[in-house]
Image 1 (cartoon, rainbow, N blue to C red):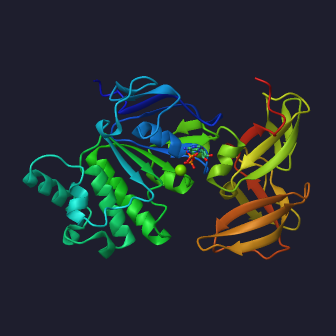
Image 2: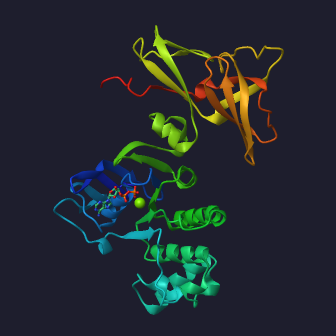
Image 3: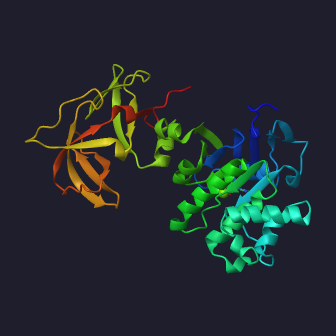
Amino acid sequence: MSSLTPRLEIQNITRVFGGRTVVDDVSLKVMPGQVTCLLGPSGCGKSTTLRVIAGVDMQDSGNIFIDGNLVCDTVFRVPPERRSVGLMFQDFALFPHLSVAENVAFGLSGSRAEKRRRVEQLLERVDLLGHIDDYPHQLSGGEQQRVALVRALAPRPKIMLMDEPFSGLDNRLRDEIRDDTLSVLKEEGAAVLLVTHEPDEAMRMADEIALMRHGKIVQQGAPYNIYNAPVDRAAAAFFSDINVIRGKVKNLLTETAFGQFLTPAMPDGSEVDIIIRPQHIRIDFDRNGRGPNPTPETGVAARAVVERARFMGSESLVEFRMDYDGTMLKVTVPAVFLPRPGTAMWLMIRRDRCFVFPAPGHERAA
Ligand SMILES: Nc1ncnc2c1ncn2[C@@H]1O[C@H](COP(=O)(O)OP(=O)(O)O)[C@@H](O)[C@H]1O
Ligand SMILES: [Mg+2]
């Protein structure tokens, strides 16, 4: 087995329930030591994909390989307990009648002494050695979560499958537990496939994100790339608020309040959406009706009037009405700045942060 063999590879997995294709031709690789997040809105087929990989459900077509070995196609099937897969779900129920030690040792084989050593090693790692003889009801939610994590990791699975494992925790705990979980997973070296509907969680945890929609993977890549080069408007909107500047193509150019944009791939008369995130719009003061000079990075500045400004803690969200066409743009700025409604200002958009897509209904026929 070469070091480039994926720990997990699924090829063309499809799952149909009652005539409805819920997972649609999904292919994915997870490399050893890597965390891949399957990210998408509720109902898009994430859990079904994970259940098929775990072997608790079976695909209608497609193949699953672990370390290059076929574990399941539509005929052949290795049972779940022999796939070397660790599972952790949102309702990660610990066995209530077993102690912490017994819970963690549950899936372990070997001598009593060996089992005890592994249990102690893992509990020590997550700071729960002092609770080794406690029962689950004596632990806080966060402590139970850590026990469930090490229980799943105890048999040294090759792959950890985690389905929204943090969604039952309250917000303040969650960030810390996510980070701790990530470092334990990295130390153990398991390949991780983590399902979540929260982009922040995926960005925080993932080496690689697979963005899923209506049963299909629509984009896959490092968090930085997915965020900064979305495949379409919906992919951009999944990660943050977006602004949409609509324009019409003429002679390969689109005229906007911020100057012309090159839109070479689009036919004349078709509409385009120029997408910009609120944090990538710069603002400047109005100097007696004049704004800053144009630059290559930002094009021309456009005048706008503050409609609303809200203090959000670390930043302010300011909504502007554009002089150009009356449309609204949202801008986030550091919270030290909170302009009054009615204030005229100038906006500039970072051109390297704009994404240009055909407007809905103006996509070119493939
Ligand atoms: N066993 C099942 N029988 C019928 N429909 C199912 C079954 N499991 C899931 N579904 C449907 O498949 C779709 C995807 O579900 P799921 O994989 O749980 O999505 P996600 O985890 O992304 O929220 C949903 O519409 C769900 O109702
Ligand atoms: Mg789910």
